[in-house]
Length: 394
Image (cartoon, rainbow, N blue to C red; front, top):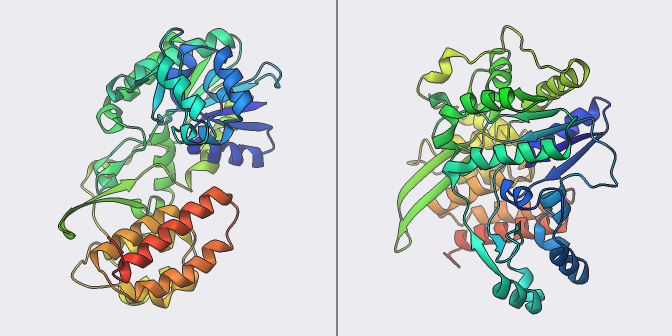
């Protein structure tokens, strides 16, 4: 069994490796703090509370087994453990006496007031320092090595924040913008210091994909995140950053590296898997004419749609809401694209966007692959977009 531990990147990768014929299991993790505080053992009092109150929904997938054991004692022996530099969850709670640390959503306290009282009496909160992330991650790797002394470990690095990945590359790992430039040196030291540890260089993998395909960051990472500055409901500032974590073209190439590591115990790179010189140059925004934008929005393809919406923000003197309305039936269901459209709707408050909301709500209601909680949250966000467009809320 191959175990993939981390965040959604490991989920995507495990699916790609599964398609290659390997037995795979994915586990989402909360923070290196949790495993380091009680390596391989779920604290007994916490286990009892969890079993008594059935708290599973409040870990958001990061159940206690994931946080403290990663791999259970009654599960298949790992042939390989693959991890990435996953982002950390908050809040994290620390037991005042035993000093174990775990993540849970405080919403659990509303449903289970006794749990809230127990935690308020016996726990404090701990804030993860982004600057020391790699230090606690290294401690976690060493603890895993003690638990599984003969199992190969493979760490998949994160994509670096090169200037060409603008505007302002964004990582879900808090503080990565200050760590990425020195992280390569740290990871190479881990490889030397920890027996049986391999490293997969994400920059080189993506460099190969870039060199063999369209050389525009938008074609690989079309999703933008926005922060608005508002005063008295008037937008006074806009900051955009590019999500460089969700790269659909990455997973097949990474899966081949995993297969190579299983077969050969090493990862090698082809001649074109290098960091391109172009990445060190400033980002060059792309533009499309109206016909091309309509084609992209009508394609039904998630990346093309997001890529088109992203260009709206380069020409804020023109209202592109009508483009969304005309192609509403083709807009894919995607939280990232919805965030972009919601932001655009706040910049251009146009009642016509309510029609897009009505059409897209029907599309979203038929999309059940991500479960009821995802759908509930998604529909709520559409409602927010519609209310603002119609002048019924802020």
